[in-house]
Image (tube, rainbow, N blue to C red; front, side):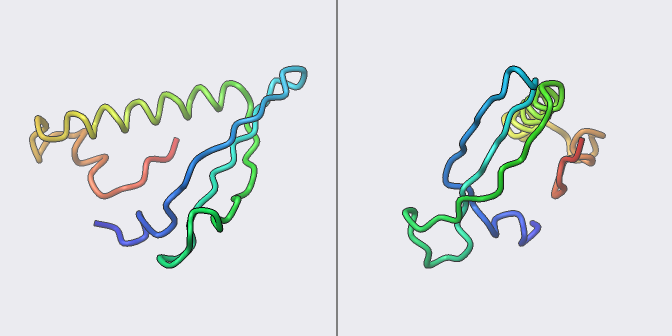
Length: 91
């Protein structure tokens, strides 16, 4: 497993919208070290995206969750398994 995968666990999320501009902002507070308390979480950076990008992110997360839910049923030789196992999903 990629050691970087769990380096900065998020502690929540904040979503703001700007309907007039057709964009939204997502911020993920995270822990930057093992000894850090939840109350001291780094607030993270705001990431701004258009509505279509947010839909693509939603769909990408749904696909990743579906893979996690079904991973035991997938054969190790399945193309989906090969694409997702131990990798980052970038869309």
